[in-house]
Length: 227
Image 1 (cartoon, rainbow, N blue to C red):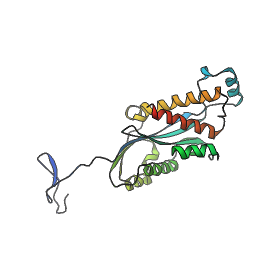
Image 2: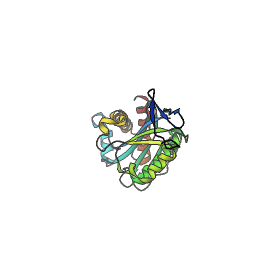
Image 3: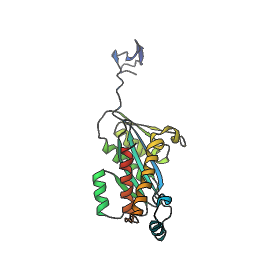
Image 4: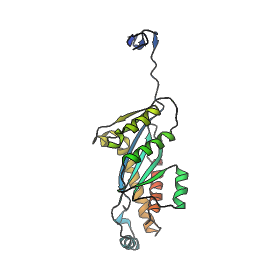
C-alpha cells in the first residue's frame, strides 16, 4: 500500500503507486549465487592407477574411507568463490604450509566431530560468504538446498542484514536444480582423486589432515578453472 492507503495498480503495463504516481523500478540483483556442501572421501584415489609401492604404502597407512565436506559457492556468472573445507576431528592441526595456502586462496577450514555440516558451522560460513561479497544495500539472491541448518532464525537475520533474498530448494531436489551438484562437485571429486593418486605415486606426504586439505584446495582451484 502507498502512504495514503492506496494499493498497487498497473498503468500502461507498469506497476505504479497511485498516491505518488511513480513507477516501481525493479532493480537487478547485485548477484545471484548458489551455495552447497558435498561430503567426499578424503582417502579416495584411483586404485588402478597406483604403482605397487604406492599401493603398499597406502595399505600400511591404514587408509580407509573418511568423509569430509566441501562447501562451495558459485555465482551465476561462473565465478567460484573460496570454499570451506570441513574435516573430521576436534580441531584443525596448525601447519605453516596449510596456513599459507589458506591465505593465498582465501579459503577456510574447520573441524566437526564427523566431518559434516552443522548449525554453528553454517552460520559462521554464511557470515564469511557475506563478507566475501561486500556489504552493499543492493538486493541479492542466494540459492541453497534444504539442509536444516539453512532454516535457523540467525541465518535469516544474517541474510536480511546483507539484503540477500534466500531461495531454499526442497529437500532431495537439488540434484536436478542446483548447478553445483550438476557440475562443480563432479569436477572437484575428479580433480581431488587425480591429485591424491599422483601424490601417492610420488610418495608425497599426504597422510596428515593438513596435507589432504592442501590437496583438496588445489583440486578446487583446478576444478574452478576447468568448470
